[in-house]
Length: 189
Image (cartoon, rainbow, N blue to C red; front, side, top):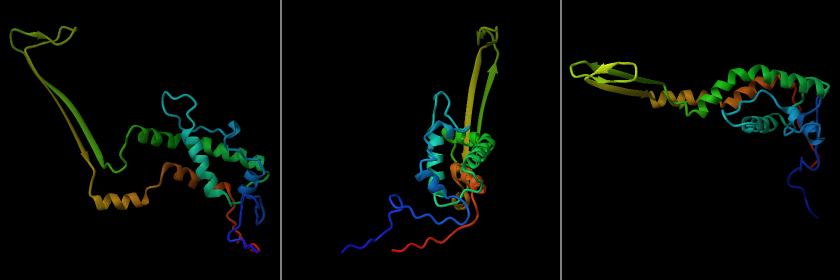
């Protein structure tokens, strides 16, 4: 005699919707396949990489995990998909610069950075040509400086606690695409 120690939701799905359709039903029935091009949106693509789908695929994976048991907020499902992609296309332009900044090595703990460059030129005879535009100088010095301030570590830790990954910020904005109704799953095992 064997007993079931856990419920296998993949092979034996047990849906308990309040009034709509759960995202997992649409995925398990094959109505949603995020790898399909019909689920493309204005996702971030790194410069010089054609058809870069890394951000898009990562977001859909997080989307599925976050909303798997949630009920879609609009029926029929085709209209829900239309509204979801519309909303993604509307909000992505404000998140793309953040993705680009992270790709360019922006440090989220950096408080500010300052970079400066200057040149002191002294002119005496005989002169030396600086460039092809007939600028002459007998002596010159270049100076560069960079200051990076990371701030107080305890202050940064407090800020880090409230920091959300860019993908998570997008997912929070997509909460409105789902019903706010939740059910308690009670199965017979």
